[in-house]
Amino acid sequence: MYCDDPANHGLAFDPFKAIITPRPIGWISTVNQAGVPNLAPYSFFNALSSSPHLLMFSSEGFKHSAENAKNTGEFVFSLATVGLKDQMNLSSDTVPAGQNEYLSANLEMGECHKVKPPRVAASPASMECKVLRCDELHDLDDQPVDTFLVIGQVIAWHIDDNYIKDGLFDTAAANPLARCGYRDYAAVNEVFELMRPSDGGTYTGVDR
Image 1 (cartoon, rainbow, N blue to C red):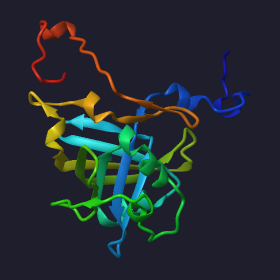
Image 2: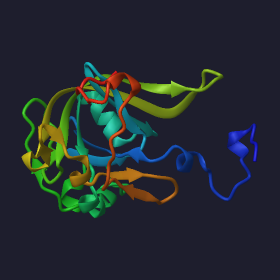
Image 3: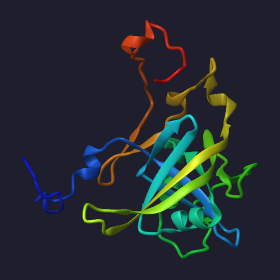
Image 4: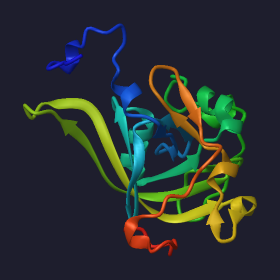
């Protein structure tokens, strides 16, 4: 199959998200200007840099998370796991502005130290972030597409000590949840090591 017009692919469902997979879930918490917490998962999410530590998420539509992050300059990422999949899914519901999804998802709010938004207390890891930019994206014709990119710098993190093993974060034990296409998800419950040619057979902890 060849398609030179992705907007008219001819399939029953758009395959884009099913091909770009698995994607980490950005479980993003913010507060509005009145201080009310908001929590929502974003599948257009990832790391951008390790020095400094930068994260991004994009919102199709100027949704509460993007709006709050832009207005307050802060957000928190919490790792979504298989054990928290139902709560994560509940927090994806469309609710009125000012409604606290922590309450509707029956989640405990964990305290953060450098930003106002709470973290998901039950998550194995969370990162406090300050917003560097929040911009609406444009297409090839320089037309706005109603998708907003938020980039933040990590200024603090929280890791449950139970998931630190020999100085490494135990990803498989944390069992992160990944977003696939359609309504599909995947679980990371097994990892394997693959050395780069330049590693000399030993991982030094320095990514290149």
